[in-house]
Length: 305
Image (cartoon, rainbow, N blue to C red; front, side, top):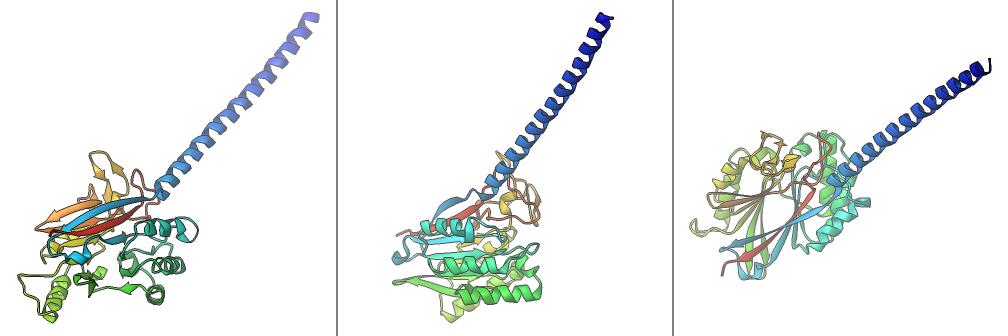
């Protein structure tokens, strides 16, 4: 009888111990799962928020001496992203480049989660650094008409120059160059050629001695059209760096170019025209970048004298 009681007690203890072990294993699994989730969230946040500045030097024979060292900072595809409170981190990084001009090459807002006030507030800050020029991207044209009008009027009030299908002359001292902005709806037609011809006619410019020309065009897949007009430098974006980037492969997918796109980031050349494609700063449909940090582009112009 005594042995039976001892056996029952041991069996009861065994069940309790097994129950405790099962609970402990559940807690361990839960802790591991939570740890993995936290690591993934931190990793994705770092991929989306770690700002990089890429510096380029463009040497041009047509550039006057007084424009030596002229710096253009390009901001593309912000998509209403935030980098610090009121985008102060982004503003500070732009200021560190000591730019003479800031160009916004489209998709300042995102049509899926539009925040016009945030976009205008950002421009309010960067116009304090230097002149700001802006062209539309596809997301601006996907806005509701009221949102589009609100954005355009806000940018104008902030002091940005809306350069859609416009040409302006930029000068410093005795040197100058031509800045052309293309509306996102005008990239694939003959608008660029028409704008350049009109500008040359107004300036009574010799066709053999064209002025140094920089073009702002949101989408890079039209490089052949840009190069066909003989422009010197094109600043573009839209491709988001291919969203995710792999060694020896580059970008994986880009809007309007599909998988393994040709133009995603960096420098491209065709018939004497150079195109620089920004990886951009924000995201849209795909919420995460992988091995593809948000990018500020800084281009320094130098003359070949």
